[in-house]
Length: 75
Image (cartoon, rainbow, N blue to C red; front, side, top):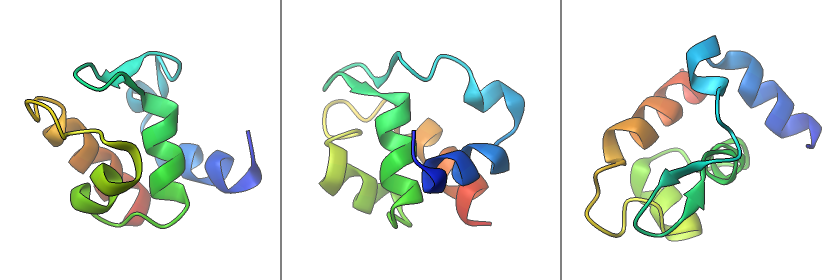
């Protein structure tokens, strides 16, 4: 895990750092850590995360969780 990702993880509440190696987006099988890495690398909106990872591109059931990660890391 690179330093940028570690800094992003440090900004998150402990509950959001659980299960990093599990799919947050089940429709497109996108791991939570991949979404966090995209945000840490500059994705500042759900749409930018979707373009980079395809998360939220299915039924969008994970959209709220992705938005929360963006909010926590970029606030």
